[in-house]
Length: 138
Image 1 (cartoon, rainbow, N blue to C red):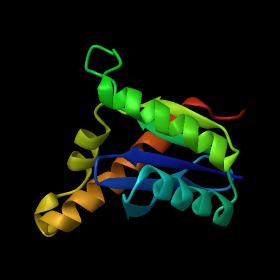
Image 2 (tube, rainbow, N blue to C red; image 1 turned 135 degrees about the vertical axis):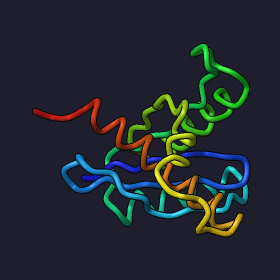
Image 3 (cartoon, one colour; image 1 turned 180 degrees about the vertical axis):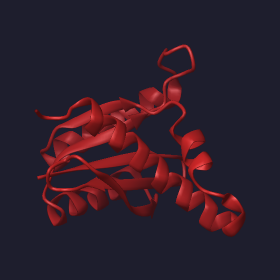
């Protein structure tokens, strides 16, 4: 079974998937948001298609670790997603994941639109890899 990670933004959701041993994360795709209901349906399809056993949602905590408005919205979305997808949804601190994604690649090679999508997808991969590393079996 695999783990699926979501980096949820206002306009897009960056997605990453683990290997079947849940040890390595890789970028999957970027989904352009339509509505919370449609977004959940899209994630449900991916859960079924990729045999996902855990969903990891990046939680945008404030720098001091507190929970702000955006984090509360993500928590509400995650709860609805867990009910709809019928797999556990874990929340994972995503502070600095986007900054790290920017550092990984030279952004000069991409158009502005591709750059934003790429960063969303890479942030999801970074979130998932952090989660997998913290929960290694063995």
